[in-house]
Structure formats: structure tokens, C-alpha cells
Image 1 (tube, rainbow, N blue to C red):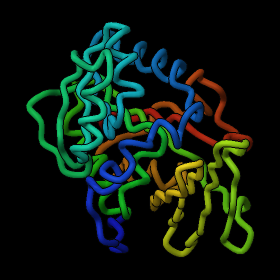
Image 2: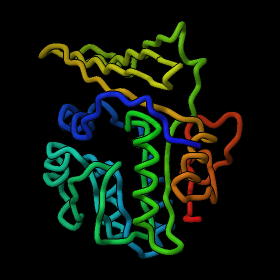
Image 3: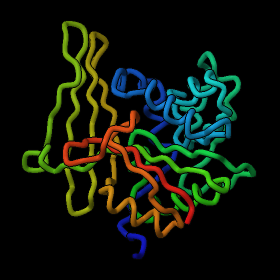
Image 4: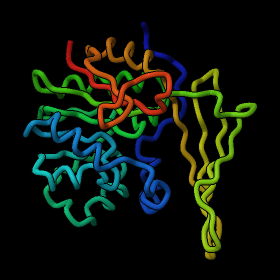
Length: 250
């Protein structure tokens, strides 16, 4: 299997630079943070965790509070500044780097890429590079944990979808999506409207099926150990919408 060549213009810091100030607003209550922290704390077993795309510290801060050593990697200075401003971030080692091209002196018991962060890399080539970097930074017996959505083209009508996330008298949040199936891309635009005006935040995701993720991991020197339908070890089956996949070095 060879890395894909369907590259698009890629700035690893762009998402964080535009979304740092509104990330928590856009994704409020969208994640199962408590369950993820419990899962990762048990998997780390006292060893350090590298959080790829640490963002505002949604996972990193409660992990450190649980006694886990955490290094948080992000390409965006604005996102890392937001993280540093948060209570509880003082014990996080912050690393500004591209998650598809990093070389660090430390090795980790667990490396995590949560909430489909891997899909924010623009093509298969960059995603394999990220997986290779992760493999090179794992301790012997260490684990790469990838949380991602299971692609479902039936969510789209003629490759379009509009979803109302929130609507009340003071605020609206609508997500407008365009599916590009031949390139395995979803173009999302979050439209936030309140009394101060309308703001738009765009992100492009290059998705892959769990089977493709396994193949990319194999190219990178990793082997699937477990796959769950969620952070509480739910079964992975035909009803699964998001998976948690755990890989070890081959």
C-alpha cells in the first residue's frame, strides 16, 4: 500500500489559529471527556501521555489532575496560548509542532489522537506520517489510541447536509457540510449567530474507514490490538458511529 498523493494546501497551524477562541463554544458538550480520561489513565498505567492536537486542554488538564504526566502537542500558537491560560495547565509540557512531522526526545506509554484529529491532516500521506511519528515515540509496549468517526455517506443528501446544533432566542449554531466522496473529504462550516453578528468557521476533514486506518497503521509499523465502540469499551459493531482503536508497535 502506497501513501496517497491527493495533497491539498496544508498549513498545520491554520485550524487552531482561527478556532482557538471559539473551540469550546463550538464543541461544548459534544465529547465524552470523563470516559476518555478514565480510559487513558488506565492505559497509561503511570506512564506519560502525548496528546496530539492538545487544543485547549480538554483531555490534558483532567489527565494531569488524575496524576498522569502529559505532553500536549499542537501546531497553533493561538491554541497553545489558550491552553496555557487555563487553570490546571501548569503541569502540562507544551510542544509547538506539526503532528505529522515531530521529533521529540521523550518516549510515551500512550499517544492519543482524539475526536477525529487524525482526519484533519489533508491526505493519506500526511496521516501515515503522523502514525509513523507516533510509532517512533512509543515506549516498548506502548499504545497509540485513535478516536475517530465511522464514515457514513448516508448522512448526506446529494453530498450536502445542514445540521442545527443549537437554536434559541439568543444564539444559533448551524453546521453546513459538503461531502467530496471521491477524495474522502468533508468540508464543514460552523455558522455561529448571536446578537453581535454572524461568524463562520471552516474545517476540512479527510476521513478514512476503520479498515483503511488499520492498513495505514500497518504501513507505519503498528498493529491493531483492540477496537471499541466508545471509551467505555462498548462493542464495535454495525451500530457504531465513533470508534476507539488501540495500536501497538509490530
